Image (cartoon, rainbow, N blue to C red; front, side, top):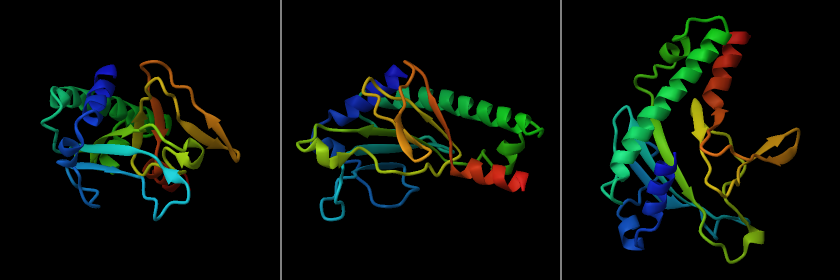
Amino acid sequence: MKGMIDAYHGFFRLPDEEEEEFKSGNDVLEMFKYGTSFNLALNKVLLWRDFLKVQTHPEFYSLNKPARFSEVSLEFSRRTRDVALEITRAISESLGLEPDYIYNTMNMDHGMQMLVGNYYPPCPQPEHALGVAHHTDHGLVTLLIQNEMNGLQVEHNGKWLAVDGAPNGFFVNLSDQLHVLYWLYNY
């Protein structure tokens, strides 16, 4: 995990003109999406984050810089895919279904996997900024790792609670698609 965090740190340390080579439009299916959430014209509260999204499945894409990003991201994406698939098998079995029920129902051979790195640069007015706004994840399973900053919060019973991540551990978020699948199966 540290290798993947370091690889993303390497990307966000590239000179601006090198990062700009990977800037993209609004198509969610692009191989790479690099950009910023900061838009003073649209946001009353500043969403203070830069991001890099790299598609790794069903076809693996990677950056040619920084050095070793491609190698590290390939290995990391393979391993995290295995973890996510094992989670879906366990959920299927816990529901009394065949282990590959979710895998087959969701056509996961062709499903998209993304690596996403967020960078929160120093903010001149942190009292007016958020890293990422209130949202839900639109995928099936999100495996989130945090660096030493531990900024993740979750909403529970109307209150925001800080989530302290275990060192070298994942925070597993069962995202919107799995909630819908569970609801369809149980009602």
